[in-house]
Every structure is written in C-alpha cells, then in structure tokens.
Length: 340
Image (cartoon, one colour):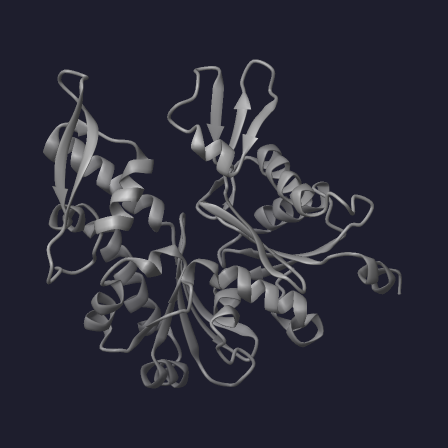
C-alpha cells in the first residue's frame, strides 16, 4: 500500500544502462535522456568533472590528470562507484524538482548477467535514488520495443547488437526460451578499424574517429555505390598528423571478423532453438535491434547466412529503452518478465 501511495507522486522510470549509451524513459513522456555512458574524473581530487555528453566531448582532448572512464564493460558494471555516480547524475537531471520522491526503476541488463552483477546494478540504482528496482533482460525489452507478441505461445527472435555485447534470444510466453550472448559488438568493430588502419596504413586514429568511420561508410556487404572518406590520423613513424582517404571496402575488411562472430552467434542460436520455436522464427523472420542493427547491409548478410527474413526494428537504437518503458507503463501486465 505504501508503494502504491508513493507511486502516485513519483515519476517512474525505465533505463537502458548500455556500455556505450544510457537511455532513460519517463513514464507518461517517453525517452527523456540519451547520453554516453562516460564519466570524467580528476585523478588528483577524485572529483567528477563531467558526465555523459560533456565527458565524451573532452575525450582525447583532456589533461593527464583527468581520467575518462566508461564504467560499464560488455554490458555490465565494471566500476561500481563510477556507475553509481553516473546513474545518480542522470536521475538528478530528471528529478531535480522532485528530490524527495524516489521512483520505481526498470533496468535492462544482458541475459548472461551473474547474480553478483545483478546485485551491483540494483545497489547502484538504489544508491542513485531509486525506490524499487526491477531487472529485465535486454532482448526481452527489445522485443517489447519492437512490438513483438512476447506474451503469445509463438517464437519471436531478436538480435540485439549493442556497444559491448550481442544478444540473440528467442522469446515465448513472457520468457526467454533460448539465448546466445557474445561479448562482441559495436566497440569491437571500432577497435578492429583502429587496428586495421594502424596495420595497413601505419596511421593512428582514435576509437571515436573509428566509430564515425563505421557510421558513415561502414558496410557488411559490398556496396553498389563505393564510398570513401577523408580523415586525419597520426603517422606512426613521424608522429605528424596526416590526412588520408579510406574506402568502404577497407572498412568492411577491417570489421570482417567481429561481424562474422555475430553471424555465427545467430546461426548457433537457430541450431539450438527447440524445433517448434525455430519453425516460428523461420516463418516470421527475426528482428535486429541496438546500434549495430544500423550497420549497412547487415540484414542482407544475415539473410544470406540463414535463409530467413531479417527485419530491422523501428529506431533500433532506442528499442530497448522503449520496451522497458512499455513495461513501466503497463507494470501489472508485464510483471512476469522481470528476472530478479
């Protein structure tokens, strides 16, 4: 009864606590925050200098005494204290006029999360001001965000490619019937581009620039209209900045290994899914969510590898946050999806 009374005054939230970005959905309003999961800290005083967009903007341009920290790795908390600070900062931005109100919070987490990691997420969220914390698996949230019938006795398959992990899951009757999780996703693709440019061009570029290259000309299959991009890196031999041109074909070669890992994880999930559910997936196709779902030609590559239709969820970057938000809007109906 006390919780019901508090809920009348609180603004309940849903959060996609991602390796690359944190998104927060406010009940009744939709997604109200989308910021990088990055914190800048002064190493001498241990004071927080910047969080989110402000911290990412100084990445690569900060002084030596400033540490840029991404507190989540492979989708789970790697630095508990910094994660708690980051969540508290984001919640305070949204609840600054309601500091006395502690909201209920739904948090999307990877399917392979351990009990220790679950506890860390819950404790960090409670320290940041949440009254109640419910955990939902990311593929389940993505499926709900893609408006799939997760409540029905029919197999719905989602491939969620985030920053740190790729989650492949088959969902039926409010539960994950089978899941496959690999710690290869967007960040690994960025790192592969950095390594390729260093090896083949003897140039050094930042991961931030590599991500920009991936977004602008990255592709999983050969393009009909070849593209190229002029960028600036630092020559390994001389240390002098130098402009050079990179092609979409080179970027595709650079990302070939991490992309193939994702393809193999999808094939493996299909092989291990129970026959009736696999038949549903074969008939209905499966859905891509997460930022990796936006990689040009990935849906085509997966279709060629599996023979199954591939759909890209509407606005795949926000699918998990929207799905978790749908849960907070209809808490009683979706209560069965919580894993804690």
